[in-house]
Image (cartoon, rainbow, N blue to C red):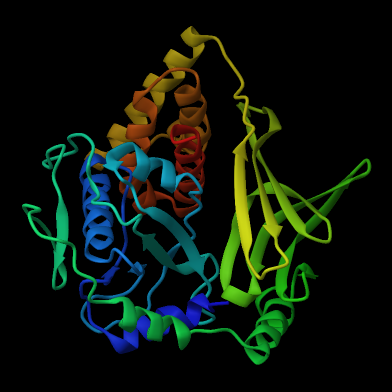
Length: 378
């Protein structure tokens, strides 16, 4: 079993960017340009590594490999995005890796790419890249190339050695559990469960009991063996259930207009732990968005966009504007779910202006975009 934090450290220490490894300060799949560049790198790394894993480490300074972290990125549908744009798509996962020196909510992202052994090519046009394009790694750069030679395996032995040096052990697991319970979440109720005598899952949060059900808010869930965060949110509520071989998370989000809000089930994620030392994660979107009168939403949508334009132009906001701004992430989310397709792009385009003006609203905006990613690629 690979300790993903050790794997990241080994990648950073052992190599500069090369044909099986790339590093990014951050990635952005919220707009066409960012999405296209991400897809290009996935294609290039898959084609240059037909027989071994390739990696992108996210949250690292390019010049000195300093680990600065990125926001927890919860996108279980990223494989669906890759499948939509790539023929012979590789298997792709994005994992949030815990590093103790990072602030709460910050992690290092680890993208793992596993080729199917077939040539990956763009399925359709995206940004400035043409459908049918093929990319390879030329050193540390992803380049388009004419494919007229056999794909060569040059990295399998190196990657196998790096992964071998990242194997987990009992000491790392015990240290991880103690750190999670006694240091990282000393102010929250924490629990752990051992599955199949080798997998350790820890979770923490504020507990709320409703009838015979227990819900958690401010939730943090981590697979200790691999130092992977499975879930993190300061806003939503989750329900946790487990058996001797499964661990299930049902996420709820609060939606509504004005004070009329209630919780809706969004997604269920179930981890199945197997006797042979492997596990699988299956996510199912169970969201049924609330529907509202379109005429009323049209008025809200236009009012929101006027406020966002004021932020962009540096104009002062009235007291009412400030109150409405706090509701924009939630109301724009509802607008998008009710057919206002431009609402998501508005949140993407104005997110940095919101961040500069009000960090609390910005955190709510990120949560809204996270939900929309899940819905879009489900």
